[in-house]
Image (tube, rainbow, N blue to C red; front, side, top):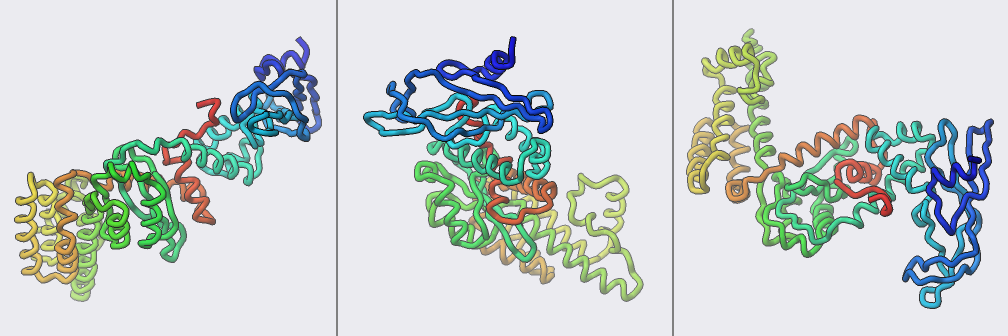
Amino acid sequence: MDATELYQQILGIRAPWYVDGVNLDHQAAKVTVQLEHRAEGFACPTCGAAVSVYDHAEARTWRHLDTCQFETLLTARVPRVDCATCGVLTATIPWAAPHGRFTLLFECFALDVLFAVQVQSRAAELLRLSDDQIRWLQHRAVERGLRRRDPERPRPHVMMDEKSLHAGHHYVTILSDGTHGEVLDVVEHRTTEAATELFGEALTETQKATVKAVSVDMWAPFAQAAKVHLPDAELVYDRFHLSEHLNAAVDKTRRAEHKRLSRAGDTRLKSTRYLWLRSPHTLSDSQRERLAELTQGELETVSVWRLKEDFRQFFEAKHEAAATDFFHDWHTQVLQLGNAHLKQVATMFKNHLDGMLAYLRHRVSNGLAENINGRIQQLKSKARGFRTWAGFRQAILFHLGQLDLYPQTFR
């Protein structure tokens, strides 16, 4: 079997195309495979009608999977066809997508490598491509995947969250599906305008009608945007963000009290931060013993911590009436305690009580969004940050959008 027959077989080339020649360049470690076609008709790429060849475009080259250690390239002059209905068009070729720079098999392999290593520069190094080529492949895959999404797929629960891009309060806003955990889209900034754009672009009108609950934190622009695009959906204030506010009140109290006590030589609260912020069941035996000792005293931190822990009962309530009664009782205790930090949180909760009670009707949260946020942080850390928000968006959608990324022929 000679080289042309070998490549005819391993490339799977079928009539009217055939391998006309193979050039091996040992010095450059490259194999160039020349493809030609016999004088036969082609199908119109638009309507599928059998049509004749009009002329040929200039020779093009596509990167293919390596042959052993040799970089392999395919080259051919692609015919243009003359269709009476559609006009003069470039014929479809079986080894590459229209306007592609790589064969379909190589594109699939490159996407697998990029998905595995998660860093464009590392993928480019492994594939012997430039950074621009890797970015082009990723962009092409993401746009292809977004086009293939089912515009009628129900989205009963969506989640909106934010993620920092650069230092200095530069954020992106992320909309995710709360049922399947897929990132729907990403926009720059966390303003009302940005959130409104995201709801408008990421959800079709059919999908908007299926949304029953929108999980958000208490950032007002998110709520305002949801009311514009999803007026029939209920806002559900995320319990994890509520817990963050309570933890912040405990920590601010601890730091202020530790500062006061330290002046008198009392260091009881030194190095105890995580004892107050973590759930008791996640503590080690020694940590639980230490916490038990601290809670025997009359520290203000202990009182705030107890009220923080008591608030778990709100989410465990069987119905809204019980949760409402609990909240009013809890709010009264906060006012009686008089701690400024916890009082501020309680007032905020009171102003957003309807959205908190909605949790009991839907029992949904941003738990998946927090998981997504953590995975996005991993992408940022591995890439050592992103220079542009557009590149950040592409990476998030590529890795976390659950998109159908491969070329159509290989779906």
